[in-house]
Length: 158
Length: 158
Image 1: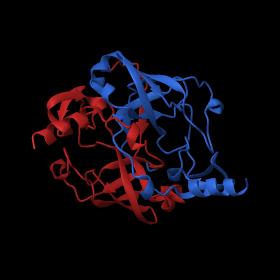
Image 2 (image 1 turned 60 degrees about the horizontal axis):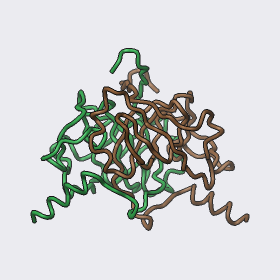
Image 3 (image 1 turned 180 degrees about the vertical axis):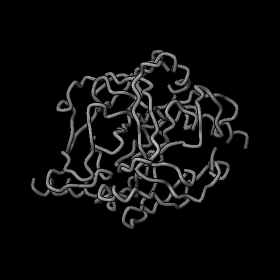
Image 4 (image 1 turned 90 degrees about the horizontal axis):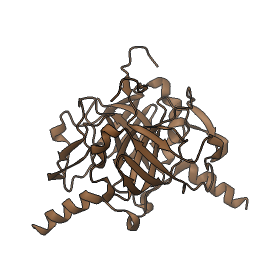
């Protein structure tokens, strides 16, 4: 990218505690389910920012792929090892800005710590933001591109 | 936040073109609908990263609240002007890391430019990342916290 582009510095608001110490342990690819429980530990001075969060069943978590470096514009991913796809059409960690996005289920809160289900981050992952998850796109209007195709190919092979 | 926290620099991958020049023009609060069309203009050297994105009906867009500064841990927002809520339980722009998250409908692509519906960003907003939107949380399991309560209060007043 060109040298004159502005840069926005982001400082973590906390850290993910998860059962995963290595990316190989995280379920990936076809049929991967994220049911692991973990915590989102906010910096104590930010605790007030969680007021009323208990009312939400699901949260968006924005975080940093801090153990990934560099990016590839096109690559293969576990969901489809045959065909390379553009990075913005995948959840590859090797992105121009290494930001991850997860939807987790909020199980409870203790002060600045949120207990959640559905973590797919490594233990120690820096958190950039938490937002309420408000609504989804209706299933009947959603198209899932190459992912639906890769799934269909696998199914047809039995 | 403490001085010793690591900082992650993020460099925009492109810019949003939208009909909104001022935040006052963006629909907000109860019943706000985001049907505005706009474009996501990627830096030309990143175009390959969009390969196969046409197959997805909806995208996540991560972007910078570049015309907002500072943050408030607790504040009132247009959806509920009576009760202040924690910043992580709202979509307030005044966040510790000023990252916005939108779901847009992909209408078409021309090279590094994506034509989308549902923009709620200002014209010129820097884009940090684009990801495929894959699935939602089933409506029957979703709880929307203070937002559902604020809506119910408004309805009961007629």
